[in-house]
Image (cartoon, rainbow, N blue to C red; front, side):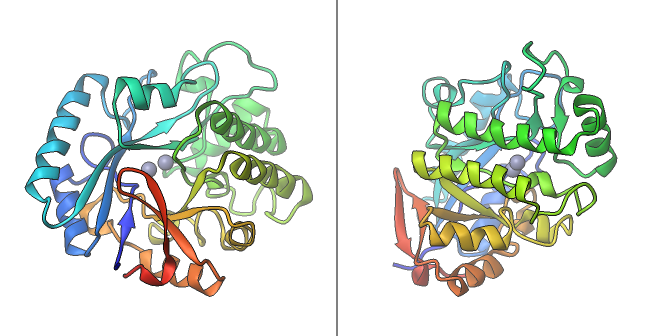
Length: 294
Ligand SMILES: [Zn+2]
Ligand SMILES: [Zn+2]
């Protein structure tokens, strides 16, 4: 079996730049055998990145049309990248299964709540620390406003939030697990500081306990926002040693990005001794890494 998979892709239903059909054509062009559509799930606060709730039916309808149209060329799956935000959106698995009827969902944390001091529900985006996006300034401002500039507190809340997401929702795939480092750029902390490593290991312990698949996300590298995968290559070695299930994801937002740095990720995973990678075709299964093509 020759296989090439990516379950993390955006399109114009959310903040992607290409239409869903162009993303699919991009994936066919790069010889993907399995491809997942995963727009940012509807988000209850005012935003410009997520699929609008009222457009979900159109999202599904367009997916069904493409799945049928290209059925001889590629296997398509319907998913969402879902945010878990304490006191705001906590039942993401329930939404994925009973509200949206998805094939799969990625659980990601982009908005961090200060759970050490805040117990009320976030009322606006100013009540959460946005750790993603293109602006470092926004990261710095959020850290100052929400955590009084205390990076340790902010980072620990980020990892605790992912742990809570896994315990409460068991996402199929954990999205870009250490994205918190993207805007850090070694300014506030170094990734080998013991407190930081303890926080990340706490997440891996939960991943192991709940058998969560971790994505190897290449977006930071090809967007030149980060010099490593998420999770970083040192952590990937740790994950392979612990036999944590992995899948490669490009988190593409344009049709030409469907397999960006996919080959580099595959080569690195083989190099560190990763024997199999996970793919979805109705359920998640392992397939030998040597059978993956670029
Ligand atoms: Zn994301
Ligand atoms: Zn994404």
